[in-house]
Amino acid sequence: MKNSRRLLIFICLFAVISSVAFYSVDSRLTTLIDQLDRYTNKNPQEKIHLHFDKPYYSIGDDIWFKAYVVNAEENKLSLLSKLLYVDLIDERDSIRTFLLPIENGLASGNISLIDSLFAPGKYEIKAYTRWMKNFDPDYFFTSSIVIGDALNGTLDANANFKLQPNENHLLLTASIHYKTLEGKPEASKEVTYNISYQKKNLAEGKAKTDEDGKVEIVYALKKEYDPQEVSINTILVRNESMHIPRNFKVETYKDNIDLKFFPEGGDLIAGLRSKVAFKAIGSDGLGVDLKGYIEDQHKNKVAEITSEHNGMGVFALIPSIDNTYTAVINLKNGLEKRFPLPKAMDHGYVMSLNHLDEENLLLKIET
Image (cartoon, rainbow, N blue to C red; front, top):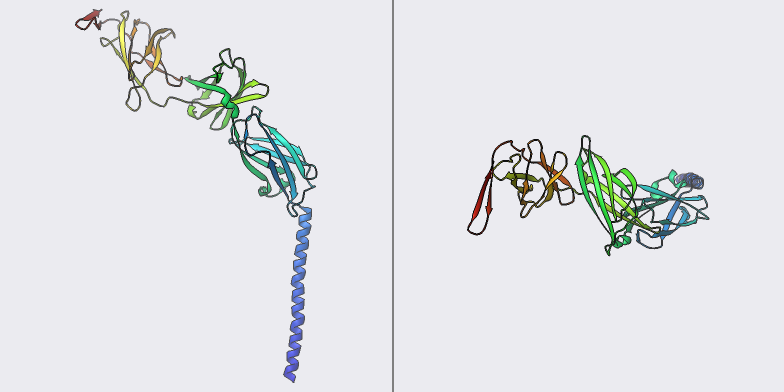
């Protein structure tokens, strides 16, 4: 009997203690939920979704979109923010920001792609409110779009480049020729451009095409810059509503050309006309065809040179004793390379051999 009474008392005490414990846990949980609700109400999270009018765009288009700004907790339109930030970020991480008013959680607008700062490529669109910048950027809206270049199909453009070293710089000259697909020059058209090195902007400017549709851009590069890392991005303004971008990578002739001269008779002799054979060899050991001219120390052109086969050719020259001569070679893409000729001797002889016909040769010796 006594044991039964003790068991009953134990059961009653256990029930009381358990109810108190459960009440304590439930109370703490309720307090935690209340605190979380108060924090959420005090610091509401926003989310954004942008709906675009189409999945892809081209230069000359407008990107039309509608924005929905919602409360992240309830997924209902937010009344908190009144201004929407939309960033358009290109592949060089250059950012253009557009601001739009938000009314009752909704915003709409467009980005015009005729601006001279836009070029074809892959872009990232990011949308957020100022309030959202206080929290994790994972809540920002992000999306990738590709901007094509349908207008480029109406323009034919090509560029030649020249590099001329001086004491401190490499003088880069870009000659760009614009014309329609029918071959008509894009004459008297405004061209805006920027020059970049490894995606870093070096210079910006404007120019106008001449009557042949040509424009020349000159810039002094630092000598330590690799010209092949330089880009020139241009936009030709055909008319008020048609801005056509064309981008050019500066190309340099990669072969290390070796040009050797072989005067007839062995030497150049001052005052005597000499035939000079030459051979151009690339870094692969094969002949390289070329074209150019010979100039004297006063920059006067005294002979034209053109290879006839596998980098070999011949030209004629009457050197003077008080002058020096240089071969200026126009490489494939318009770049120039210069090679000094052997210095003329003040005395000696020139021997030449000419075919008169199939059976006769003429040997001529001059001193």
